[in-house]
Length: 636
Image (tube, rainbow, N blue to C red; front, side, top):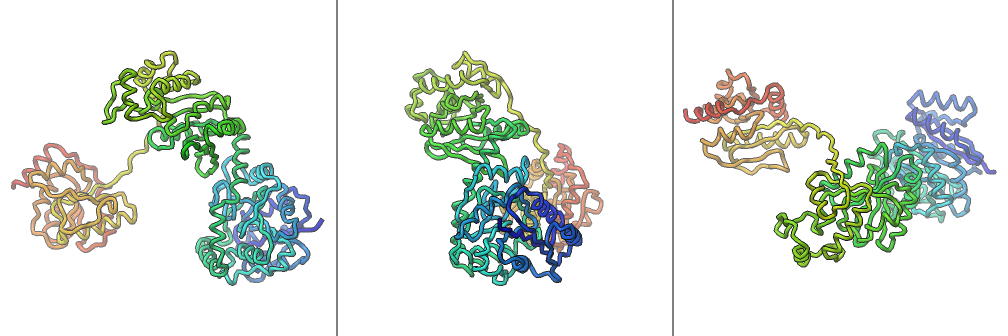
């Protein structure tokens, strides 16, 4: 059996390097191989010690570079050791498992194949679970368990590709001899040298393959460090320049997602063979309270069950999908045409229960799904869809309809036909059958249960209020209020600059002008600033009390001589920040809940003062006494 050289250039990342090489040496492969490690003058002494120890124990062949020469040079030097062997280039932050090399070699057995890449989780041609993404390994799996699933789900399966990228590249020796060395020079770095090689191989007539039955885990660019994103951008630009058709080829890969069929089969295995029962929630595709309730339930039972959603897609098509973050499983079925196939899919996934939350937009055949799949089900009555095709017992003008008799409902449906074209009798009969067949019929309130019982009296309805977690405490946002008409002299431009600074730095602060402005300024939602508009002087104390300000602000840009609005501010008891200019600091000298700032201070300094004053003082209550004092201040 021919020997394959597994080439692993190492530079940074001792932990990742150890995990990579240990996975290679522990894998149960039949293919004869030799591990060739190239220490590219690693600056990490732990990396150097580890690979030297492996070499001393004859676990690997070690090449030591006297100076750092880069990824491409390391591959070329290793590939030159044995010019009759195929080469697997493996990134030092990759992890292999099982008989991975046997499967890779099998895909490369044909003479017209030049190179092969596996499925991976991050930075590859075909990633899983999400395509074209940097995925973490799903929490209930390892690199080895995922590789096992890919081998089982897609035995011998591969797809032809126009270009390759990934943490592992199997290269046939004939291809390497024809195409030549790996070369990062035209790219400006060693980033994407494997992609560049694959494009040259395709130009030379070799086929490029994605191995659908091999999964190699990847941490992602450990050796490139923080420069990875910039190098990637530069490499893509260079590839576009070097290969005029590369952008089109990459777009083709992104559009067709060649790894998706292989990933979907693995999804099915993961769901079918998981340790948790699978429950399918049936609903519309809107958001709102129903979706929130479903999401809350899914999170609540997440440790004990896996939840899938079934919702309408387009026309008579429904979508079955996994709503968990970082999963992309989705399958589509036309109903009633694909009802038996959907039912079979649910049986394959070992679905334990259906839960109907709503049917808006669903084909009528969805009501037949429990019987077709042979699974029990529950129904939650989020509204009155089972008795009212308008769902909310609502008239055309948005009022409660009063629940008229059948003739009244028929008149309503004549103006607003129900989905599925049913009359009120057929509609209620269809849903009565659904409700009577449910294991549990759930209402969130007694009113819903009692109202529904008038129409379907022979069913038991459990009243379960929706489970809700305690909402997080609202964030503390400092409310800064400016009094009076705001001009440049009064600090209009300063206020605009502070609002912009707060927006850019996401400071917990908002600005409110109780008055008008002489020039337009950015307002909410473009900036955390709003303007009340003109008011009568006598209205100011009551307006101020309603604002519940944390800080009153006087950013005057000229020396004030007195300021009546400052009198109102002082009487309110609310903390004050003002310019250290003119009469303002003089009048604030005896006011303990105040601070002054240089009139020409930058926006960041003003905002720091406003936040500091708000943080060190309690908001004073807007009592009637303070309002009276403020009114007296205006009158004096």
